[in-house]
Image: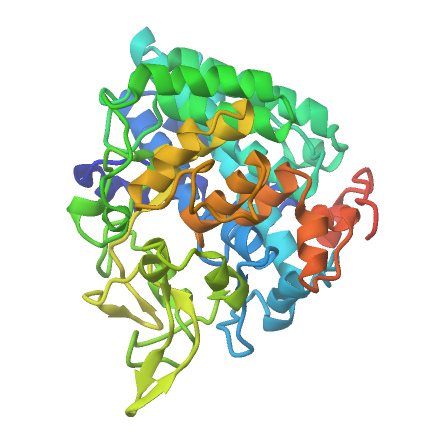
Length: 481
């Protein structure tokens, strides 16, 4: 999410446009046609609505949001402690993700559905209203491109989590929503690809975005490449990702010389040359702030943070995946903490530390951004798509490790596919990629079963929420639930 600091004041106000629509199925019913038509007229109105659409990313990528919870906890990377902060998302339902005992009544399954469809509603209402607005074509095209990028991202997350889902591309009434059935996964992917291709054609070049952190052409193409990979079309993925590489490598995007430079709580670490699409946070009470530092800390570790959520605690299996000389392990993972002079050996994330954060109730108002797409992802996806290890070896070279195909490279990763799997795991540890990576390569069941997870192919999708199906009997349930 890309918003200049002088636009932060609009973020909370922008939410007013979308409050009050949290109860209905799919979260799609407009507030009221009269109210909506009165709001969407001037450029300032659309600026406000656009910023509101970006704020949805705070929920989608929240510590207990759809992507963090599934991307890590359904994988072999993390676990959840028994004392984790619960709130409306109960501890039993949280542990169900770790244990693959998820039911259609799970509160997380419903929360994720609501979060993603609420985000899509914000995109759809802007797209619907801007077409008839009396604004410059350049401005309208930019906003349309941004909304289609975000909608493509949200539907990509939905289809990976639930499979085929109701495909809604315009604001509809609650009654219309209740009558919708699920589109096929292929139909959803076709819409995602269409949105991202449109976005790539409409958005500005990197560096000329209307505000820092807003979507640009490279972000749309990078996400499109990941979508093609997920569909198994390596040829198209390779083509579009090579376009990103050829257009921007070294000039606009590159790996930072030091992996540590990706993670920190000051402007130095934000929106770097490696960042392609990044969610913006501004630490401190009263601002949009990051909570990864609190929630991904051990529950009762008050010498590290004032509070801890116990979410996404690091497994020994992830820790042991790192090569002995890999500096990314100590940058990414803490081995424990000292309490009353006694060392407590529990592994937890070290990427979103903000020791200067002030307490806001039971959270700490940290000032860390979150990168959704970064250049290392482009490089590793290029090797996955093309089989050319030069891109993977750039990532390894950054941290001083032997290149694939040379002496000293770990012998257990003796194919390009296994090498990419290993490299993605340690490069993006705790950044919500792991489960989606294993799903994309059809390795999830094999890998997770070998590590004691009770999982089968049906469990590669979440159930359709029971509450949504009770509201709309046309929604079929996924197999295995």
